[in-house]
Every structure is written in structure tokens, then in C-alpha cells.
Image (spheres, one colour):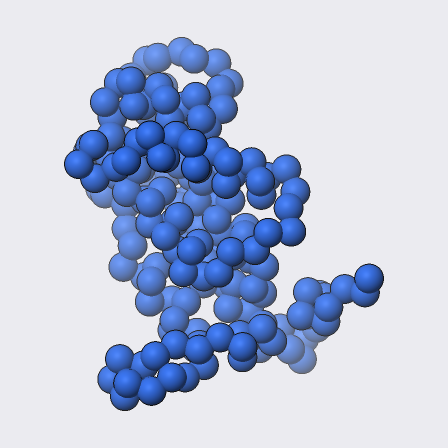
Length: 175
């Protein structure tokens, strides 16, 4: 198998060009009601107003801003969507560990799944906003699939849902 050109390292002539796969995706423009190809703004707009609460520690906010930048830069390198997804889940894991530390709870180095169960047990999530039973199962599986190597590539909308869910969970931890 040869590596597709769209997955190869860019050079100085095409580094600022959108990933060639972008031309295969369309979106319905709300203003004109016509379909059009994705644009950079379609990657910027979903993340530019996504913020963590002021009560979230700054080091977690910085970590999460990297997630947002990775999502934005997937316009140029489509496979960055997987990296953005993984980083969002790592931001959540970081926030959970930080919350344990703030609460002076020592659990050692435990997995994302166990961290989520611990948070659920301690009622750190608003159950009206969060379906914790689904979260406890789905998010660790998603993280492990990417972290341990996978060719699975979700679309931008699916990755954005995961990023938003991670932001909501992090905000819940520090409400």
C-alpha cells in the first residue's frame, strides 16, 4: 500500500492549503440554503465560542485550548481530527486527576474509566446534564482506540460532539 498524498508531509508550497479531502464534504449554507464545500470557518466556528468556566484551573484551560487548535488545524491535515479527539479526552483525564488532587484524594495513577467512576461516585457531575453511565463506557473506549493505535477516523461533527462533551464534563468538575 502506498501512502495517499493527502497523508504525506506537506512542503512549503502547499502547507497552507486545505487537506485535499475537504473538497469531498459539503455543508448547507444557512443564508443561501445551497450546498457548498467546507471552508476554514466551518472548523473555526464550532470551537471559537467553546470555553471552560473561570473556575477551571488555568493549566487545564491551556490544555483544552490545544484541543481546539488541533480541531481547527484539521482543516489543513484531516487526520488531526483524531489527535484533537484524543487531546480532548486527555484534557478530561487531566481535569479529573487535578480535581482529585484539589480534593486531597489519593488514588494513584488510575485509568480514565476509573477516574470517571470515581467522579460519578462523588457526584461531581450534574446528572441532568451528563449521562454518566454512557460516559463511563464510551469515552474510555474512544480514548483507548486512538491511544493504542487505530485507523478509525471520525468526521468533524462527531469529533466536535466529543470535544463539547469533554468541555461540559470539565466544567461540571469545577462548578
